[in-house]
Image (tube, rainbow, N blue to C red):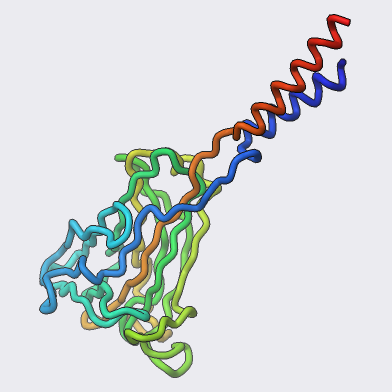
Length: 242
């Protein structure tokens, strides 16, 4: 009977870890900037933008620069007609994406990004839960939008160039799970441009496209797992009576 009870405890442990359930990956939000274009085809000038609704799912994008002369525009994307672009970059300037992760866990973020030759080349991904402080998670470098090294080719509407893509797994950050509000920021972290050893110029731009935030649903034990545990418990009870 002791072995049966140990097996029952093991079964319950596996069930509580979600191994009996399919933790399906879901897309919380995706921004392709096809409809969430800043200021229409002419762009918009100002220190910040906000209220850019996700094309897929639910989420809101925004951005902020130190310079009020910043132009936010929508040139061609990476395999799409639109993207989000801006100039007048300074250290600490960012674009930001807000979502809810209620009922979700194991977050990840994917996006495409390129800069002009004199645009920013060094960024970091940071996150915030609720109204807390932002936490730096990962540094990364951006390639220039050009065919020659170190670029991989210019962005166009027909074909996505995968080499300009980034994917970051944040499943290790438990604080991001099941939260009513989570923000992700892509932040300029140095004055180095995308073609080192140059320095970022006011006319230099950085361009974002195909920003996607994913997660997995918090799993629950399946009915099969519950039935198995019930059967083991019943067998243990019968053996005890005998």
